[in-house]
Amino acid sequence: MFKDNLPDLFYKIENKGLAKGLAKGRAEGLAEGLAEGGLRILKRQLSIKFGSESTRAGVTDRLRSACPGQIELWCSRILQARTIDEVFKGD
Image 1 (cartoon, one colour):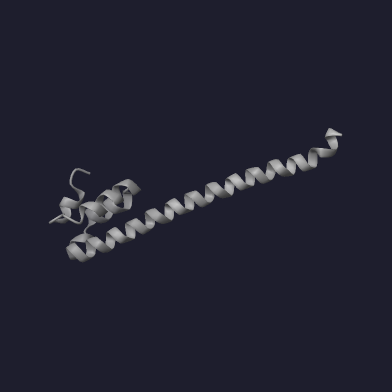
Image 2 (cartoon, helix red, strand yellow):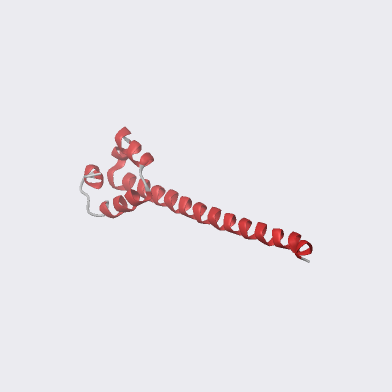
């Protein structure tokens, strides 16, 4: 009797694994998309506020290597920063 239920059991286990994998993939994709969106907004803000200074090598390197938390912090700092260096100070 147990042998008769094995294919159904394997199917259920496989589907659970697939569902977990899909959920994980969606979450990772969402996080990546949000980070990319935040970076795009920050680049635009820097360009509007500081012009060509926003494209200098040190700034672009920092942006490229930033984690989502840093990007969020910099998006807040830009509101009161008088210089581009104030956006990144201490980081």
